[in-house]
Length: 70
Image (cartoon, rainbow, N blue to C red):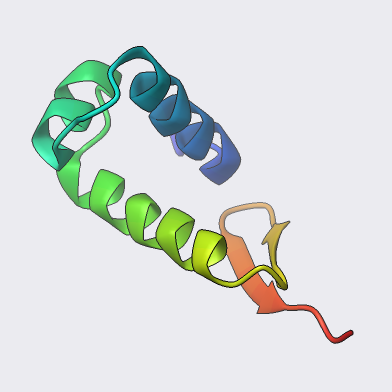
């Protein structure tokens, strides 16, 4: 069964809060999420943090990143 994309991000954030410096493999072991999936979501998180106008839109099976027009 597929996990909710925002739930995956929340699990990654919780793992990072418990341990300040983690590798992709450590995050994978701690959360039980495949390391390829962890890497994908870490890239998404980094992109969102770099661009303040970025918004995350949750769909049924994925998330969409979009830059807001201001």
